[in-house]
Length: 73
Image (cartoon, rainbow, N blue to C red):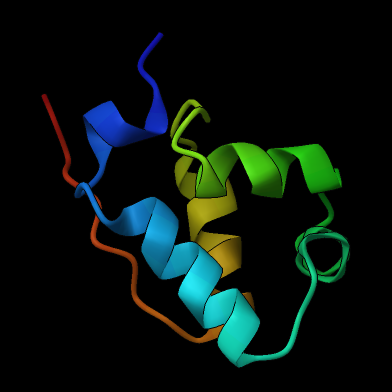
C-alpha cells in the first residue's frame, strides 16, 4: 500500500490542514462532514494515509480546495 505522500504532491497534507483551518474547522468537524473518523483526517494531514480518491474528493468539496494529486499507473 502507498502512503499519502507517495501518491500526492508533497504539500497536499499541509494544503488540507491550511484549508481546514481557514474554514475554522477542527479535524472532527471535517471528519463529520465527510463521514469519516477524525483519525482519517489526521492521517491525511500527517501524510500517513493511503490515498483514496473518494475521501480526497469529499475533502475537496468540504474545504473548497482542489488538492493536487498525482495519478500513477
